[in-house]
Image (cartoon, rainbow, N blue to C red; front, side, top):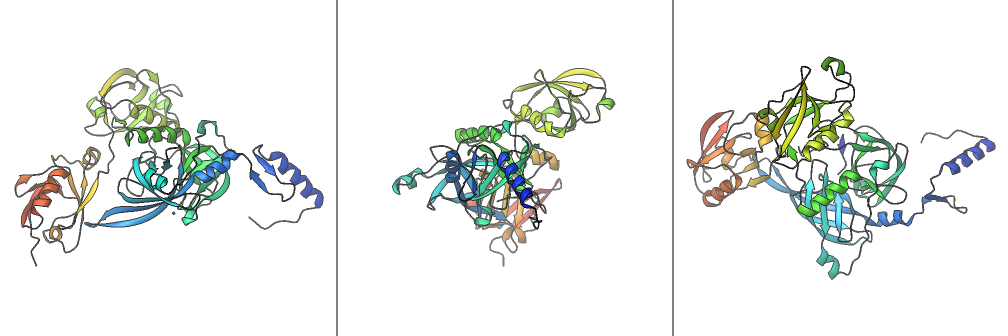
Length: 466
């Protein structure tokens, strides 16, 4: 699967066959199209289509990247679409994220305008940026904006257009159809390591989507945005995927309001019941299988086990027979207000019971990254999720993710995967405490205590050592 951040020979036909073919093509054309009597050119005539084309932008991003104990600025391009009159632009989370240091948007008139980061939601691979109002005003620039369509009305075979900036070619349009309206990818991870796709299915299209198309819209002939283009399948043609507009619309509203989307975490992973109903003695189209329960999670504390069947969530029956139905159930669990109580009716060994659990706030396995340049170390805030996965039981969340060769931490024998727990015998447990120590002690010889594979060790870090 590729994240998109940048006809056979004709056969001879008789005249009558060509005429019949032309007539059938004319009859098959959607009402939104016209066929010019003079030129024979087929094109969408709805003014909303051109309006949406004029709303699509190219996005240049300068982003701070933390690798091998150092930081650097990397540049990438993507696409976006202006969705309201205040200049809010919807794009992909893998196009722009909180590490962006500079964002420049190219409008339809080729003017380049500064933009600011508003928020992102990597779970759906969506992000929002905003055109710089002062920049627009000072240069007397205007823009158009698109409108959302209803993705639930899409059907396989509907004609759609992908608009974006493939390989840097701004406002490129490709035509295709909707190939599938509810494609499911299990356990999808972005190139950055962030999770995505747990709470939504995808629109599949054969309209060409290439690197650089990411964040651009998939639109109907009338210009309605019905999904946001995200990725294409590697080593294949005509297999593109996008986030449905009904998901994107809700996520965008949350990002504009608060810069993030709050969700609940239960620690439950699900599997479809397809072809397993007889083994669990349960009716068809009722319930979903608990595949895994994270250790120490709310579900684990409530004594929910793999192999349990969830029949209802807060009294609402669930149907998880097929894989495509899982994101809706996961979204139901995640949409419950964090830190509130959930009632799950489950079946275990043919008996029903109700389990109550208090959900936590959903976190990614990837925490905030930063670099301490003088020490030559890259750090990451270790989240609860990662700590559970790694079976780490430590009061500190200071995870070393990179060491620069020849720098003080490298010379001291500290390695990626270590957890810093103290400096000069003084405990440190979060980034604020570590940064304070760095500012005060970065030029001095220090004693760093780390935990590695559940074993503590001490290392002398000497910036002046030759």
